[in-house]
Length: 472
Image (tube, one colour):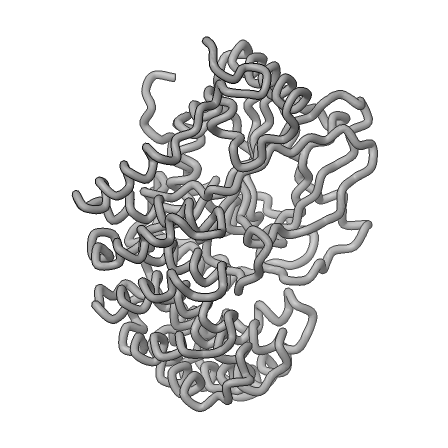
């Protein structure tokens, strides 16, 4: 490595990430580095068990992985500069000859409306040589935007395996379907999982961008379905364009009717219908709004994804939906708030309506509100005040998401520091951790001093164990 400057992804790599939801990459540390990591992991797991969220401080050299230019470049490309490492991390140990179940990760035990746009990502790092027989992580490409498991056993030949030499890692969209594969060698296999979140909305491409227009990656083949309109919209969103689909398809009454009926179809078909409706002007938006308000839960959620990409034409209808929905329609309200958040600054006029929903009795709605307020690019005193109050919400996920939202406001969120100080003593480990993270993103003198005091009091010694309590 000549320097530590991030090695940004190319256009073709970004096209593959957008379509497949995963990339297999590799660091170039010397073999001795990984041998040392594995030796330490073996010692810690044998003597102490899985260190869980203390994985990074317990294995001190591991921090170098997340300073490596291939890793920082991949994360910067997908999540933008100043991305945040989540306080949850886990060392997965696999010695089983039985494959794990296909699954999506939850949001540390909670659920939320999953983003099609890349807001969260994971790194799955393999510190030892991991051939197929050692049981690498398997990923089903192209499934990152499917809520349901839509693939069948005979499609597993398309599975992407993160196998390779020590230092190989999978960069994945947080919501992709994945599993552990059989370890038929019976030797220890470690996979070190770390999560990351976007703290800045894209204003321009953050990868090594050379081509402005979307095109499909070469040789693309997916096991389930293709989503050209959605992929183009995601590319544009990552390039700083919000609502880029608006009015890009001439409305056709027969086609719009057909697409509306397709919103209740097989999920991949429904997703394509939602994005095509988003491109079809006000007529398409009206069909999406009807489905949002009156469709079954899955239909309503799919409509929200379309509305989140439909531009200004969707905003008035989304605000009206929030105002007119009965309080028991918490899914509808949460879906509408989600769409407004994804429309970012275009929807700034909707902020008062969104803030008002913090009084809603449903934690699902309140979580959607604080998440959206962190995306809407508005430096409003009432936004900061709302998020500061949310740090004391009765629901832990609301408190956590409020902290993450404040981190996206930077120095403008300084007024929330007193509430963040309280949150650093929260009963929930992730609320505590991310209140501290938020202070670093606020970055003012007061925020830094508050953070330093907290860190000095909470500092942890990675050398101290039950067998090595004091010396050397």
